[in-house]
Image (spheres, rainbow, N blue to C red):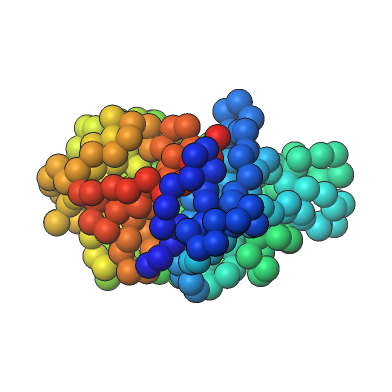
Length: 285
C-alpha cells in the first residue's frame, strides 16, 4: 500500500525527502489516553488519535497534525480522546470529549466530512461516551458505558440495543463481510459469536480481551493481551495461532486490501500483510 514505509525514532517520518515537514511531531498522551487507529478507504492513509493529539498520515508518508474542533448548538471548541472510524472515503464518525469549556464533556456521536478537522454532532451529545465504535455493512456499532451493544442503521441518528454476550462489558466487535448477521464480540471473558445479529450468543474462546478485526478479504483475526495473533477460518468457532505482536494491543484495523494495522502499548504502530509478520511503521510517544 505504501502507507508510512519507515520507522522514525519516536516519530512517524516520511520516507521521501526526509525533511522536517514530513515528520510527525512527538506527542505525549495524557494519563489513560485513548489510542485510536483507522484506515481511510479513499487512499490508505491512517488516522492516529492519542488523547489530545490527532494525526493523519497519507499514503506518501506525509504526516499532518490536526487540531479538531466541533461546532454544536451548545457551543464550539476543541475535542480530544477521539475514537474514530471511517464511514466512507474521507468521512468519519467519532466519540470523545470536549477539550475545553464551551461544549458538553461528552460529545456523543459526531461526524466529519473534512478528514477529521471539523466535527458536527449526530446524536447523544452531553449524554453518551462511546468507548468503542465500529462500522460494518452500512451499520454503526457503539459501546456505551452501560455495557450494551448499540446498533444504528441510519448513520448513528438512532440506535437499537442488543444485549452483550455476558456480564462483562464488550470490548470489540467484528462482523462477517459476507454475512451481516454473523457477529463476533470480545470481552474480559473471551470471544463470543452470534449468527442472528446479536440476539443470542455462544462463547467460542476464553482468551481474555482480544482485539478483533474481520477484513474485507474475509479473514478474521484476534490479538490477545500477550500479543498472540490468531486467525479463524470458520467464523470464530475455532482459532489457530498465526503470529506474534507486541503486548497490549489498543486497536486493530484493516485496509480495504486486507493489510492489518495495530497500535500497541507505548504508541507503537505496526503493519502486517497476513497477521504473521509485523513491521513497525510508527511511534507516537
